[in-house]
Each structure stands twice: as C-alpha cells, then as structure tokens.
Image (cartoon, rainbow, N blue to C red):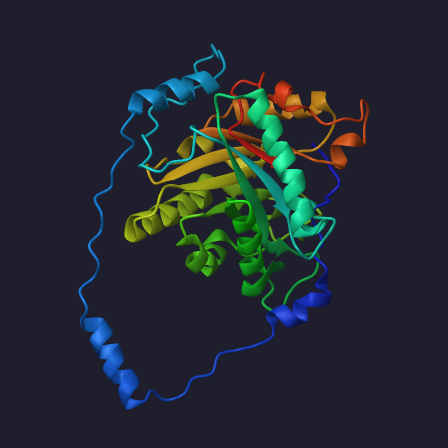
Length: 346
C-alpha cells in the first residue's frame, strides 16, 4: 500500500536542544562511598514466582471468540503460551491515541491539549464499549519516542530520540485517563538493539509497553520516508525477549509489543517469531486508505500470517482522502477475522 507519510519528518528545529548536553562526574565523598558499599551488601530482592493466568478456560474461550468463526485453521493461533497474571489481552481491548507532542502532522497526540485529547479519546472508548459490551476497553497513549529523520544526525542514525521530559509529559497525560502507554521506535539506520535499552527505565514501569515500526527500519541504508523499511523475526524476538527479561526481573505484569505492518516486506520470517508468557505480541495493520483497501491489507498481511493478536489503525484524515471518504466504523471492524484487540487512532 502506498501512502503519504503523515507520520514522518520530525521538526528538526528542536533537535539541537534535544541532542545537546553531556555527562560530568565529580569525586565521591567518603559518605557516598560508605552508602554505596552498604547498598551493594544488601541482598537482592526475592523474585516472585511467575504465575500464569488462573482461568485458562476463560482465555481459551476469548481467543476463540475473537477468531470470529475463522475456519482456515490460522486463528486462534495454535501453541501460544498462556500469559502471566495481569495480562491485558484478550480480556480487554486497547484503544489508543497515537502521535508525537512536537508535531501536529504525526498524529492526534500533537493536535490537541490534554483535556481536549481526553474528551475525544473517551468518546472513542465509549463507542467501543457499546459495540462490544463483552470486552472492557483499556485506553492508551501511543507515543513515538524515537522518530525517523529525513537528514542524518551526527551519529548517522537518521533516528531522533525524544527527551525524557517529553516522555514524562506523555506519562502525565496518560495518568489523567488511567491509560497505559506505548513508546514507539522508528529506528532509521539504527536498530532495536541500540534503541530499546535507551527506554529501559520507562519499560520497567508496569504501565509502559513498546511499539516498533518496520516502515522506518532502513537496513539497506536508505533514508527514512523515501521507501518502506523492514524488520526480521530476529528484531521482533530481541524486543520480546528484552521485555520478557524486564518482566521477570521486576515482577511486572505482561508487556504488550506492537509491531506495525502494511506490506509483505515490512516483516520477514514471521514463522520464526517466538512467543513468551511475559509478552503479548500484536501485529498492527498500519496502512491508510479507503475501506476496501484496508480490508485487503488486513487480510493479506495480518490474517494470513498469524503471530498472536491483531490490531488495526484508523486515520482521522488520511482515510478520508479517497472515495467513499470515510473511516471504517467499530461495528465494521468487529466483522474482521480475527477481531482486532488493539485499535489505534492517528
């Protein structure tokens, strides 16, 4: 699917302020050394034994229900592990607002002040609650924390990391509506092994999850935004294994990993993607266009290559560009096989 790249081109006027700064060190005082030694002697906290969900029957029934009568054998996904206690999916549907606080062109997060944003998101949540009363809705804020660039940065990565103060603002906005958070990565010429660890202090928080966008993963050295990038199962596995370790080491509820996709080449070797009880993977149909095109994209790249759960993105502006000039409705999305458990609005 060819689409205008409305999420691309970060306003570089702020990049100098973001990239500025450094690290300075001063000698430790005697008291600081003493405290450091005492801290090192403290026994490590005992890890809680991982517990899978208690009601596995309920889980099985729900994944069968969201398969929505599929008879191809693809859905529900076979041999998937039961998640740990505290898992959101498939018991709730996540409804998210997407974007970046610096840009009005990259999604709805940058278009409105927080109170207006929540007024609109609450309206979408209410609609989904009415369409599917059997599935509670979990609101979410999905923030692009590393933005693919059209010009190189000093390190040659074409990937601009957002400052902590902006991520902190996102956390505060999410807290206003009791929302979970997704931090999304457009790695450019960098890679997930470099970029995911940068977010570790946030990913250790129970409400923070991860998104990765193969569209802006330029393994061939291209400039982001000029062609569609790609990620391999190995990239996705690195992310899920990293998240799984954080869950185990910090006694966290399972994380959700969102993987954007709207072409065949964006995700390679899907059969090699590994599933973990600590992580729930969502393949998110990320393309824009008229309803028939979006249906075809979902069937070609999400339905036919099952991983675990599915998502669907709706564009408030781009989906209206071609006839019949309308977005798909929640009621229409509920007819999909499988039904998406993650809905993203841009």
